[in-house]
Amino acid sequence: MARLPLLPPGRPRDEHPDRPFTGYKLARAVLSADGSRTGFAGLTLGATSVYGVIADASCVWNRRHAPPRRWCGCGFYCLHAQADARSLGCATENRSALLLEVTASGRYIRYERGLRYSRQRICAILDAQCGCGRPGTALADGGSGVIGWRHLTPLCAVCTTGRPVLTLEDFTSRLDGPVRLTSPSAGPLAVAPVSADAVPASAGESPFAVLSAEIALLHARLDDLQSRLDR
Amino acid sequence: MRLGKEQAVGYVEDTEADAIAAEEITVDQSQLPLTPVTEPALHVG
Image: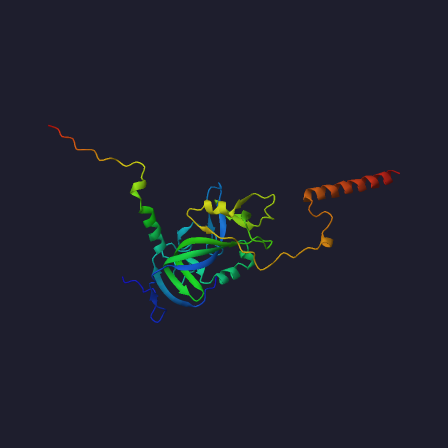
Protein backbone atom coordinates (compact mmCIF):
# COMPACT_ATOMS: atom_id res chain seq x y z
CA MET A 1 0.00 0.00 0.00
CA ALA A 2 1.36 3.38 -0.96
CA ARG A 3 2.14 5.66 1.94
CA LEU A 4 0.43 9.00 2.17
CA PRO A 5 2.72 11.87 1.15
CA LEU A 6 4.06 13.92 4.06
CA LEU A 7 2.58 17.05 2.63
CA PRO A 8 -0.71 17.45 0.75
CA PRO A 9 -0.55 19.33 -2.57
CA GLY A 10 -0.18 23.04 -2.15
CA ARG A 11 1.52 22.74 1.21
CA PRO A 12 4.96 24.23 1.97
CA ARG A 13 7.93 22.82 0.07
CA ASP A 14 10.30 20.03 1.00
CA GLU A 15 13.84 21.27 1.61
CA HIS A 16 17.28 19.76 2.25
CA PRO A 17 19.72 22.33 3.67
CA ASP A 18 23.46 21.62 3.83
CA ARG A 19 23.88 22.39 7.50
CA PRO A 20 21.77 21.81 10.61
CA PHE A 21 19.95 24.75 12.18
CA THR A 22 21.05 26.69 15.24
CA GLY A 23 18.19 27.39 17.61
CA TYR A 24 17.39 28.49 21.13
CA LYS A 25 15.18 26.86 23.70
CA LEU A 26 14.43 26.52 27.40
CA ALA A 27 14.81 23.33 29.42
CA ARG A 28 14.94 22.29 33.03
CA ALA A 29 18.21 21.05 34.46
CA VAL A 30 17.90 17.63 36.12
CA LEU A 31 20.14 15.55 38.38
CA SER A 32 19.94 11.76 38.65
CA ALA A 33 18.83 10.20 41.94
CA ASP A 34 22.38 9.11 42.78
CA GLY A 35 23.83 12.47 41.71
CA SER A 36 26.21 10.98 39.19
CA ARG A 37 24.52 12.21 36.00
CA THR A 38 22.82 15.36 34.79
CA GLY A 39 20.52 16.07 31.88
CA PHE A 40 17.64 18.17 30.65
CA ALA A 41 13.86 17.91 30.75
CA GLY A 42 11.25 19.67 28.67
CA LEU A 43 8.88 22.26 30.04
CA THR A 44 5.53 21.18 28.63
CA LEU A 45 4.99 18.16 26.39
CA GLY A 46 8.36 16.62 27.18
CA ALA A 47 8.31 17.39 30.89
CA THR A 48 8.44 13.72 31.83
CA SER A 49 11.25 12.82 29.44
CA VAL A 50 14.89 13.41 30.34
CA TYR A 51 17.37 13.81 27.51
CA GLY A 52 21.12 14.21 27.18
CA VAL A 53 23.38 16.31 25.00
CA ILE A 54 22.50 14.40 21.82
CA ALA A 55 18.99 13.03 21.62
CA ASP A 56 16.45 11.70 19.15
CA ALA A 57 12.84 12.68 19.70
CA SER A 58 10.12 10.12 20.29
CA CYS A 59 6.40 10.73 20.45
CA VAL A 60 4.98 10.42 23.97
CA TRP A 61 1.52 9.55 22.63
CA ASN A 62 2.19 7.28 19.72
CA ARG A 63 5.51 5.42 19.34
CA ARG A 64 4.50 4.16 15.90
CA HIS A 65 5.14 7.41 14.11
CA ALA A 66 8.39 9.31 13.76
CA PRO A 67 8.50 12.86 15.13
CA PRO A 68 7.80 15.50 14.12
CA ARG A 69 4.40 14.53 12.78
CA ARG A 70 2.30 17.39 11.45
CA TRP A 71 -0.97 16.63 13.24
CA CYS A 72 0.78 15.70 16.45
CA GLY A 73 2.73 17.99 18.78
CA CYS A 74 5.70 15.64 19.02
CA GLY A 75 9.38 16.38 18.42
CA PHE A 76 11.87 18.80 19.88
CA TYR A 77 11.11 22.50 19.68
CA CYS A 78 13.41 25.48 19.28
CA LEU A 79 13.15 29.14 18.32
CA HIS A 80 15.18 30.89 15.63
CA ALA A 81 15.82 34.01 17.74
CA GLN A 82 17.51 34.03 21.12
CA ALA A 83 15.38 37.05 22.09
CA ASP A 84 12.20 34.97 21.63
CA ALA A 85 13.57 32.26 23.92
CA ARG A 86 14.48 34.88 26.55
CA SER A 87 10.92 36.24 26.31
CA LEU A 88 9.57 32.75 26.91
CA GLY A 89 11.74 32.57 30.03
CA CYS A 90 9.81 35.46 31.59
CA ALA A 91 6.70 33.28 32.07
CA THR A 92 6.21 32.23 35.69
CA GLU A 93 6.41 28.52 34.93
CA ASN A 94 9.66 28.96 32.97
CA ARG A 95 11.62 31.08 35.44
CA SER A 96 13.84 28.24 36.63
CA ALA A 97 14.64 26.97 33.13
CA LEU A 98 18.05 27.17 31.47
CA LEU A 99 18.45 29.00 28.15
CA LEU A 100 20.12 26.63 25.68
CA GLU A 101 21.68 26.93 22.25
CA VAL A 102 20.99 23.82 20.20
CA THR A 103 21.70 22.31 16.82
CA ALA A 104 18.56 20.94 15.21
CA SER A 105 18.78 18.22 12.58
CA GLY A 106 17.02 15.19 11.16
CA ARG A 107 13.44 15.50 9.97
CA TYR A 108 11.95 18.90 10.70
CA ILE A 109 9.02 21.22 10.19
CA ARG A 110 10.05 24.85 9.87
CA TYR A 111 7.72 27.55 11.18
CA GLU A 112 7.91 31.35 11.22
CA ARG A 113 9.51 31.54 14.64
CA GLY A 114 11.16 28.17 15.05
CA LEU A 115 11.41 24.49 14.31
CA ARG A 116 9.95 21.18 15.36
CA TYR A 117 12.56 18.49 14.69
CA SER A 118 13.75 14.95 15.37
CA ARG A 119 17.42 15.19 16.41
CA GLN A 120 18.99 17.60 18.84
CA ARG A 121 22.48 18.46 19.98
CA ILE A 122 22.85 20.84 22.92
CA CYS A 123 25.76 23.18 22.23
CA ALA A 124 25.71 25.70 25.07
CA ILE A 125 24.04 26.84 28.25
CA LEU A 126 23.59 30.55 27.62
CA ASP A 127 21.75 31.68 30.71
CA ALA A 128 20.43 30.66 34.11
CA GLN A 129 18.62 33.20 36.23
CA CYS A 130 18.14 33.08 40.00
CA GLY A 131 14.62 33.85 41.23
CA CYS A 132 15.97 36.99 42.95
CA GLY A 133 16.96 38.53 39.62
CA ARG A 134 20.71 37.95 39.80
CA PRO A 135 22.56 35.68 37.37
CA GLY A 136 22.58 32.05 38.44
CA THR A 137 25.94 30.47 39.23
CA ALA A 138 24.80 27.18 40.72
CA LEU A 139 21.85 24.79 40.73
CA ALA A 140 19.90 23.65 43.78
CA ASP A 141 17.14 21.10 44.30
CA GLY A 142 14.04 22.62 42.75
CA GLY A 143 11.67 20.64 44.95
CA SER A 144 10.11 18.69 42.06
CA GLY A 145 11.14 16.06 39.54
CA VAL A 146 10.29 12.84 37.76
CA ILE A 147 11.12 9.27 38.75
CA GLY A 148 14.91 8.99 38.92
CA TRP A 149 15.60 12.69 38.35
CA ARG A 150 15.39 15.84 40.48
CA HIS A 151 14.60 19.18 38.88
CA LEU A 152 17.24 21.77 39.61
CA THR A 153 16.76 25.50 39.91
CA PRO A 154 19.40 28.20 39.31
CA LEU A 155 20.65 30.20 42.28
CA CYS A 156 22.97 33.20 42.48
CA ALA A 157 26.01 33.42 44.73
CA VAL A 158 23.98 35.22 47.41
CA CYS A 159 21.05 32.79 47.47
CA THR A 160 23.27 29.69 47.59
CA THR A 161 24.28 30.52 51.19
CA GLY A 162 23.59 27.49 53.36
CA ARG A 163 22.05 25.44 50.54
CA PRO A 164 23.47 22.30 48.95
CA VAL A 165 24.16 23.13 45.31
CA LEU A 166 25.85 21.96 42.14
CA THR A 167 27.86 24.60 40.30
CA LEU A 168 27.06 25.09 36.62
CA GLU A 169 30.54 23.73 35.83
CA ASP A 170 29.79 20.56 37.85
CA PHE A 171 26.46 20.28 36.07
CA THR A 172 28.06 20.35 32.62
CA SER A 173 30.83 17.93 33.67
CA ARG A 174 28.17 15.32 34.57
CA LEU A 175 26.40 15.55 31.21
CA ASP A 176 26.90 12.78 28.66
CA GLY A 177 28.76 15.07 26.28
CA PRO A 178 30.57 18.40 26.06
CA VAL A 179 28.44 21.53 26.42
CA ARG A 180 29.79 25.09 26.37
CA LEU A 181 28.99 27.24 29.37
CA THR A 182 28.74 31.00 28.97
CA SER A 183 28.57 33.53 31.78
CA PRO A 184 24.93 34.16 32.73
CA SER A 185 23.76 37.65 31.87
CA ALA A 186 23.13 40.23 34.56
CA GLY A 187 19.55 40.69 33.37
CA PRO A 188 17.60 43.91 32.92
CA LEU A 189 17.35 44.75 36.63
CA ALA A 190 20.14 46.42 38.59
CA VAL A 191 20.65 46.37 42.34
CA ALA A 192 19.65 49.76 43.74
CA PRO A 193 22.38 51.64 45.64
CA VAL A 194 21.70 51.70 49.39
CA SER A 195 22.42 54.90 51.36
CA ALA A 196 24.21 54.66 54.70
CA ASP A 197 21.11 56.00 56.53
CA ALA A 198 18.97 53.21 55.15
CA VAL A 199 21.23 50.47 56.47
CA PRO A 200 19.75 48.96 59.62
CA ALA A 201 21.97 48.50 62.67
CA SER A 202 21.85 44.76 62.21
CA ALA A 203 23.10 44.87 58.60
CA GLY A 204 26.11 42.68 58.07
CA GLU A 205 25.30 40.47 61.04
CA SER A 206 24.35 36.86 60.57
CA PRO A 207 20.57 36.24 60.61
CA PHE A 208 21.11 33.67 63.36
CA ALA A 209 22.81 36.28 65.57
CA VAL A 210 19.92 38.70 65.02
CA LEU A 211 17.36 35.99 65.78
CA SER A 212 19.22 34.97 68.96
CA ALA A 213 19.22 38.59 70.14
CA GLU A 214 15.48 38.87 69.47
CA ILE A 215 14.81 35.66 71.43
CA ALA A 216 16.95 36.88 74.36
CA LEU A 217 14.99 40.16 74.40
CA LEU A 218 11.70 38.24 74.39
CA HIS A 219 12.87 36.09 77.28
CA ALA A 220 13.85 39.19 79.26
CA ARG A 221 10.42 40.73 78.69
CA LEU A 222 8.68 37.50 79.74
CA ASP A 223 10.81 37.35 82.91
CA ASP A 224 9.89 40.96 83.65
CA LEU A 225 6.20 40.22 83.11
CA GLN A 226 6.41 37.12 85.31
CA SER A 227 8.05 39.08 88.14
CA ARG A 228 5.31 41.76 87.93
CA LEU A 229 2.61 39.10 88.08
CA ASP A 230 4.30 37.52 91.07
CA ARG A 231 4.20 40.89 92.85
CA MET B 1 5.24 26.94 22.40
CA ARG B 2 3.77 28.93 19.53
CA LEU B 3 6.01 28.78 16.50
CA GLY B 4 3.76 30.59 14.04
CA LYS B 5 2.75 29.57 10.55
CA GLU B 6 4.31 26.50 8.96
CA GLN B 7 6.74 27.34 6.16
CA ALA B 8 8.47 24.14 5.05
CA VAL B 9 9.36 20.60 5.94
CA GLY B 10 12.68 18.93 5.30
CA TYR B 11 15.56 16.82 6.37
CA VAL B 12 19.08 17.85 7.33
CA GLU B 13 22.06 15.72 8.34
CA ASP B 14 23.78 16.32 11.67
CA THR B 15 27.06 17.31 9.99
CA GLU B 16 28.58 18.22 13.34
CA ALA B 17 28.32 14.57 14.40
CA ASP B 18 30.29 13.54 11.30
CA ALA B 19 33.00 16.07 12.14
CA ILE B 20 33.28 14.81 15.73
CA ALA B 21 33.38 11.19 14.59
CA ALA B 22 36.20 12.02 12.15
CA GLU B 23 38.17 13.73 14.91
CA GLU B 24 37.78 10.70 17.14
CA ILE B 25 38.98 8.32 14.46
CA THR B 26 42.06 10.34 13.47
CA VAL B 27 45.02 9.02 15.49
CA ASP B 28 48.56 10.34 15.33
CA GLN B 29 50.57 7.13 14.91
CA SER B 30 53.79 8.75 16.13
CA GLN B 31 52.17 9.46 19.52
CA LEU B 32 51.20 5.86 20.18
CA PRO B 33 53.23 4.64 23.17
CA LEU B 34 53.23 0.98 22.27
CA THR B 35 53.95 0.26 18.64
CA PRO B 36 54.59 -3.37 17.74
CA VAL B 37 57.89 -3.92 15.95
CA THR B 38 57.71 -6.04 12.84
CA GLU B 39 59.69 -9.21 13.55
CA PRO B 40 61.64 -11.00 10.81
CA ALA B 41 60.05 -14.09 9.43
CA LEU B 42 61.37 -17.37 10.84
CA HIS B 43 63.10 -19.66 8.38
CA VAL B 44 62.63 -23.27 9.27
CA GLY B 45 65.01 -25.43 7.34
